[in-house]
Amino acid sequence: MTTTLDRLGEIDQADVVRCARVLLRRPLLRAGGPEAELLPVVHRHRATLTELFAGVLGYRLVVERRFARLYKAGPGADPTRGEPTLTPRGYAYLALAMAALTTAGRQTLLSRLVTDVRAAATQTGIKVGDDLGELRAIASALRYLVSLGVLAETEGTVTEDEALLTIDTSLLGQLVTGPIGTAGSATELVELARRPGPRGVEHTVRRRLVEDPVTHYADLTDEEAAWLRRRARAEARLLERCFGLATESRLEGVAVTDPEDYLTDIAFPGQSTIARIALLALPELLDQAPAWAEISTERVTEVCQGLVDAYPAAWSKQVVASVPRLVDDVLALLVALGLARRHEDGWLLSPAAHRWQPEPDATPRHAESEAESEAEPVRGWSLFDGEGETR
Image (cartoon, rainbow, N blue to C red; front, side, top):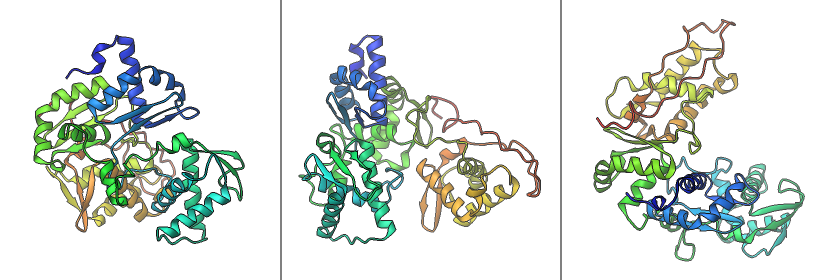
């Protein structure tokens, strides 16, 4: 597939790919924010980047001198996507704060903004209180707006009793992806935000390849699956050329990874206790099942408890203090990676999880041993066996 990159020299091609990768990771790139030094390069190549994102992914790109905004498709009902610092309540206050800020002018007092947010909540039928949880949810929403550059703490901070806040109205108007004026409800707004690109199946599938760690054929429509099977090799070359991504195709689906880990929001295998226990639990949980393996929460608990007991000094004591919570965290990680999903009263493990077959570093020791050393980080492999082959 010919891309806009073909019209550029090697140096400009490298700059465009670098900018595209940064925009995929930071859809709102702004002056004063992370990697702001790249804004001049983005602005210089704005025409090429706009054409690249529109053609390859069906994404709209807006570039000004002070910011660049890549409008991605919304994640819809995917529970694993979102800002980790915000709870569902925090997201509600974020939406209410954005609504209140549209009529606040250039500056506002923190107390006035909170009053306006509470008033907006009342108008929409949302019950608000003064307990600590409510206050934390409001504060987290406002801190998130500060991190985006929409709010600037001119005097004081949003965690204090009072503060003077300056509003960047230009950035505020760039936040929402979906067409607010068209949507008649919040649900419709989410659906419109995640609608397919102008090329239908092509953009829908390619977005999944770029945004998700693994795409299972079973999760695609017949038309989408047929398109991906037919186009697998060409898509691998395209994603490597445009975004520096590596693609691995297998019978069950396609995994796309970033060799530099820059676009990897969840590192796996990882060095945390949760990541290592999840990795070591996979072989026992899969039990050589060739397809999706059905397991119960009790089985996951049994395997995790066994690993905690076998390697007592290898884990963070705080993390393994509560095994039920550990199990929840392990399952949440596997779900976020696309390796597990809810199924009736239990769970299904993806056949892609067979890629990891780790071997323990040492012989298990009893809990009373004090000489146990921290386990070495497990070597990371890609999602499926081999690279670039189809079996």
